[in-house]
Amino acid sequence: MLEDKDRYIIAFEDIPRERAHMPELPAGERVKNFEEIEQGFTSEQAQEEAQRCLSCRRCLGCKLCLAACEKDAIVFDQVDETLELEVDSIIITPGSIQPCDQPDQRFGYGNSLNVLTDLEFECMLHLEGPYGGLILRPSDGEIPNKIAFIYSDEKNSNRNGLSLLLKEAAAAGKKIEGSELWLFSSHPAAKMDGYKSFLEQIAQLTCKSTVPESVVELEDGRTLVVEYMEEGEKRIERFQMIVIATQRKLSDSIKALDDQLGLKLAQHVNPSEESDPVQTERESVSVAGGIATR
Image (cartoon, rainbow, N blue to C red; front, side):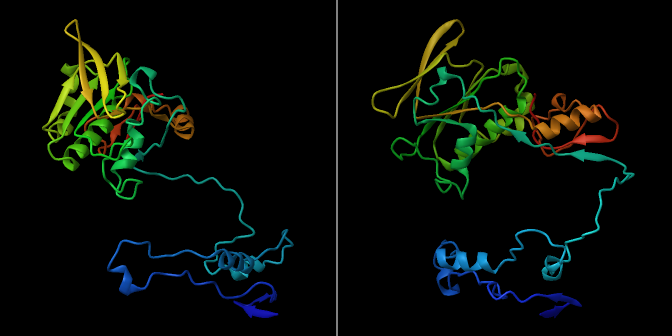
């Protein structure tokens, strides 16, 4: 039996006392590449490390875990308590969830590899994503020069979705030199001033205040034909990739908080500057970050 911090610890023979060291790429090799530094445990090392951990099977009140916890994070006599705090203001940063239903089938999602949702395109833009930050056409790995972004929300209730889509369009314009970008939007052109900060970043953007009636992929598997109405006439345009804005909703926890405090979060959307807190119906209570409607 060992003594640690004035507590007695049973020395289990089947549990090693030293933590296994994570294998790492040598410093001399790290500077030459972008490989992962931590190499991970082998199957044998992982099993040995798992056996090292305390395995009480059931709590006997021996407080062995308390003795082994260096951070003193275990409090056996802790009970629930209610705290009352006085603050000058509250800023809520709500989370969002992605609904399970797929985008409108008329936009070709699911029928063509080159039709992506905004979330999938966001992963493509990310440096640590599957494409390493490169914008590549999924069907053949080529760089698309002409991309359409579709924002369809006839009730205009998810305005934050348009700002996110414009951000992605701006990122695409910077990554693909000489690219041709289009925006098909149900948002009225007269109300686009709120997105001026995004639009100024996309010099090569063509905006259409209409939503495509159909998207059809040609047999070559690379060309997407978009059919839309403009000024009462049917028009056709061809693209190499399409990105569709998806509907985001308030998370269940934020909905519950919204109902409890009467904040009416869905009404407080700042489409142009998401980082600026927006005042809610409650005095001194603001909301920051992207908000989408219920």
